[in-house]
Amino acid sequence: MMPSLTRLLLAAWLALLLAGSVGWRHSSAQENSPPGCEAVFAATTRGGAAASRRGGGLSCSPRVNSGESRVVRVIDGDTVELAGGDRVRYIGIDTPERNEPSYDRATDFNAVLVADRGVRLIKDVSETDRFDRLLRYVYADDILVNAELVSEGWARAVRFKPDVAHAECYAALEREAREAKRGIWAN
Image 1 (cartoon, one colour):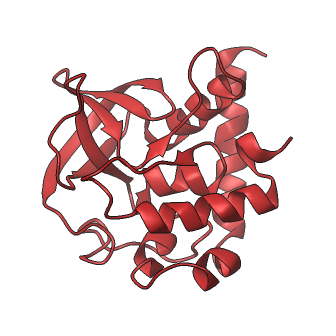
Image 2 (cartoon, one colour; image 1 turned 180 degrees about the vertical axis):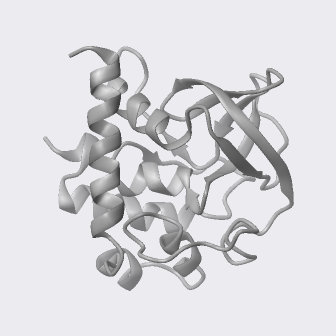
């Protein structure tokens, strides 16, 4: 398929998902997760509720809002480039690498969420990683992109200390995506 057709199909799929998810809740994720994950779950399309415009509130993103910017390039499923040249690596998740299955689909799903859009960036503890990329939770409108990628099965939950504010919530979302066989867990 041509890349533009793939992105168009992914955009249509995401629109249908958003339209059909208003009353849906992460039942198994909510039942098996620690307190404080409600705001993270609500900030996904399957969560059914909009997150706070401040980035989900203290229970969702407890650190400092580090501003808004525009995504000018999607590098892969968990990394983007912003206007001004900064690269952002999403905290708490890992998507397939270029040589792995589902790389293109994870990258395309990320692009549907953030390409050529304004995003809000929320810092946890660390400023940058060893590659000098900003480490952030990323919101596109009221969707916590990091959590959305895990919820839809295009990312694994990973824990890299000290940036672990949502680690348990992401683990619950990953368990649910695995059980539902979404994204990379489909096979």
